[in-house]
Image (cartoon, rainbow, N blue to C red):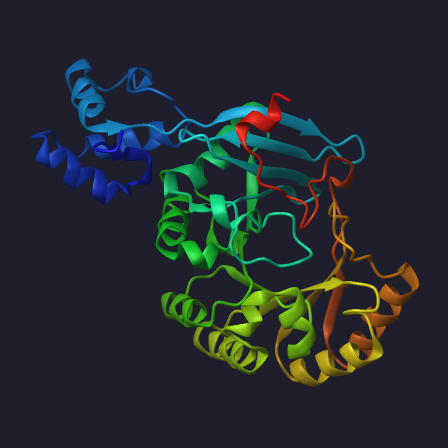
Length: 347
């Protein structure tokens, strides 16, 4: 399929150009786009498209189709975790969560991750690759088809660093928010980054209405560099000014994700530095109780210290909440998604 076009990665205007090259009318693009966003797996399912055009499309294009290798349903809260197999043998995990306000889906943007955060199970530099826009979109389409649940909110917080796959992620955002497709508005999308400063500045220029979430996790460079190698490249001295520039350019409040790790990030010194760093910044601090990752020596803060830390931030004028942990019994919580090879599923 290397010489074929991944048709689901194309926007309607790009489909129009493709059809024009085939000598076909442009209006067919809207029909094809709608079929693709309904999750069809072959051109033959496009019943209002002529057989001749379907044959042309089959010759020049292909439709991505992930395979559900494993599906786990939490007995605690109904969270569903999918292990999707991709066409090249890679696999990714996707989590569908049910809230009172609707269904949220946590999407992976890469197979494996190069960032190496010590509290996260997704680190796999040897096998990491970018997902295409179609492959990211498929996570929504096929989770919806299998579960019967309509997705209303998206968080790009699964395996991978979204801004390390910048072009494909931006194309995905255009696809998923298009009114003729899945049609999930930008205000219902959160994009998480560990802090790739140049890409944060680039994203700001697009002035998208999404929520930017910064995986901060420590307010002191020495600590952050130990648990997040990206800080050795883009330190807090660069990251926080970039966040302020982002807010100034977009007017969109940033959410700072902060893992509560016992005796590492939950100390009085960390609370003091976090308050100093974010004082006067229109932002939100999302405290995340550390989830267990096999093989990690890190342990979560006590409930008492978590409550104290939150209250200290609030007392000093910061908006701080504690993230509700879902799917813990199926390792679907924040930081627990692990890249698995297809062969591991059958063992």
